[in-house]
Image (tube, rainbow, N blue to C red; front, side, top):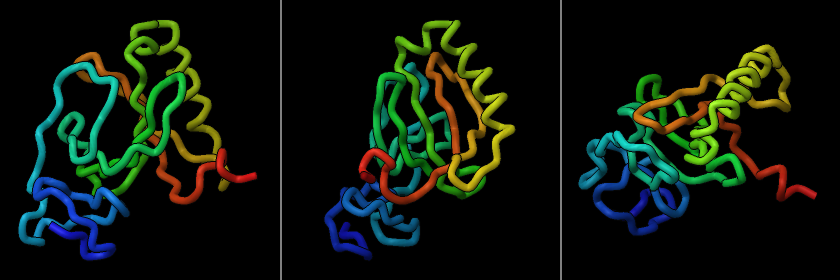
Length: 144
């Protein structure tokens, strides 16, 4: 199926365009109609996957030493957010998880237009991830 926005060809089981990330609505013939819910420890997500029956992956935004960040659709509230999937090596370190919990406590107290909001930290079937505000635009690493 071709994307209605950029005309990029996409597979029939995709909900978001692989080129521009535009939503391929459920009423579009051949559009993605759900997805397999993942239930094992993960180190990577791919477009169209659903994590814990709630977060559908749209695209990977970046990666670093702590994990990978994805733009996802929160199907429960119908809003795009960012999800940081922690590397399994980091997630296995209980001290690192405790540091993330403490950072979350402090991050929730910060409210500033140049700081994205952090929502929560989760663990599901050995997979640890953090949900946060999705801020569209250019990465700060690309700005000079």
